[in-house]
Image (cartoon, rainbow, N blue to C red; front, side, top):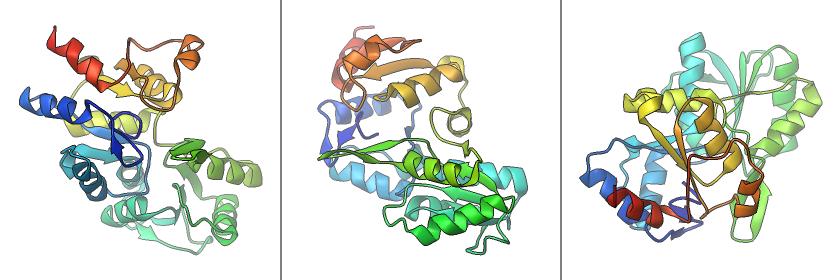
Length: 252
């Protein structure tokens, strides 16, 4: 969503109109984000404060996607040692998974972005992984955009744990397939009838192509036109922002 609908706390011109058009046309859609720090309800309120109205049921984050994956694989009550903020923690609880800080008990280690990360949290996660817990990353984003620039994202934490354990994480979020399959199931859609609109070439475009979606790249966020010129395979369509995409859509 960040870089497509808004930047920091400012809506990108045309974003609200694009969402309103989807609603008027009764086009099924969801706002899919790798960021697991907030709940769907918190994201819905954040968008509403910027004049972009999306119900929580249509805001899909890597937190619930991760919880759904673990529950489907191992069932309720599975002990999970988790690093993260409200979004992923609430999702794990709502999936009836058992949150534990005991590395000897954990069957899964889940790592999402945690802006209060500590050595003790990484220590417990590393010990659990070395003890046989499955290592799950909500998303691999190495950086996170903030007003000052790019800062370490969840991928930085995953890299630290991989270096400490020699175990690579299984990724749920973009560009890996699990989050896309989960979102498509939520919408009741097939890949061949669905488009993915995003601002990151290495997550949105790459991930969409991996599962057979039509990919639309917008230049309103992180990835640049220069990066696009070197990225293969490229997106199916490119627009400066949602405003220009909406104009093209209306001319169909």
